[in-house]
Length: 84
Length: 84
Length: 153
Length: 153
Image (cartoon, rainbow over all chains, first blue to last red; front, side):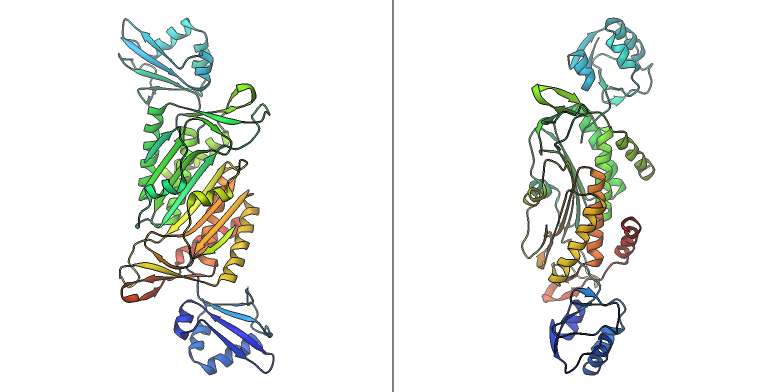
């Protein structure tokens, strides 16, 4: 299954890309995905330790870290917004 | 000396005119003018008894009934405003 | 800028008059002629606005100065129509500009609230058969103005 | 109506979209690019607005619905620019329409306050040499939003 990661603001700048498509062999939780990403790139440690960053799965904020991810899901990384 | 009276809203409608030029032989106070006007036309009794009506002398609200009137003065009769 | 006029106005053009790179935040209040029933339950066809122009200009200038000072506005304009207006037509536009939005918004509300109970305009509803009906001041508008006394003084 | 666009807009045209004889009162909030110093004290040449468009549209729809219900608005529109903007350019316009002014004004302030801290837009200051500097969320905006929680819930 594949999941799209979308990066915004300083996360996009730091990762030097706006999105990633990741392929997985089995269903995982958001919590497990976080560990996987940190192993791949230590920048994700900084992102996940920043309490101001919000995570939206298919346009809804994640409120349970154990939520499992499905094929085609879009997970967005959102620093504090500054529009208007 | 002459004084201009300006009438607005229901006062203008009731008096069927927007202004009056009155000629006086001697200086009088606003209070005396009121008595004179009531003698001339009983409609003025209704106007002066209505606490919501304000009187402006040369664009300033009258706060002292004993204020004297001078030649060229403009005295305006203002019902509660309803603009905006 | 303060303007009392018998002509309509364009929002974009009025914005340009107060716009500047140093502002950042603008608040506008626009009042228009609302299709409604008069106090005698008749259908309103339009309104007629009477004004004591010299006095209204003086009063609006005072309100504008108060707002500029109290809310540190960078600009402020007030336009008010007089004469005969049809349903839907613009009556009044208050524009406030500031570097910060809360100031612009609060000042704009203060100005329209003040104008409604302090400035020499009188509204008449135009009904069928050329009948005119005087609009009465709303007690709610008076009460709303009282709250500003604490803020402004 | 909700619109996220890389084009500028005209206030009079946007007013026409929400205008109706039954409204009477309109409140507008307009935010523009302010010439200012960045957090590193450099002169700002413009801004760049990033957006997660699908999410921002969903979030704006929710805020708009809340405002329509809570303040009994007759109409409401929100327009927000994205992309590169020069000094003085319009960023955001919130328009609320109601039969009574206090509702229109309060709802308009609620919407812009909500947008500032809830909707997926990110601002960058454009400086000399194509340098971009991220704008930080203001703690004041967060505090301001807290007061609405009591009103809206």
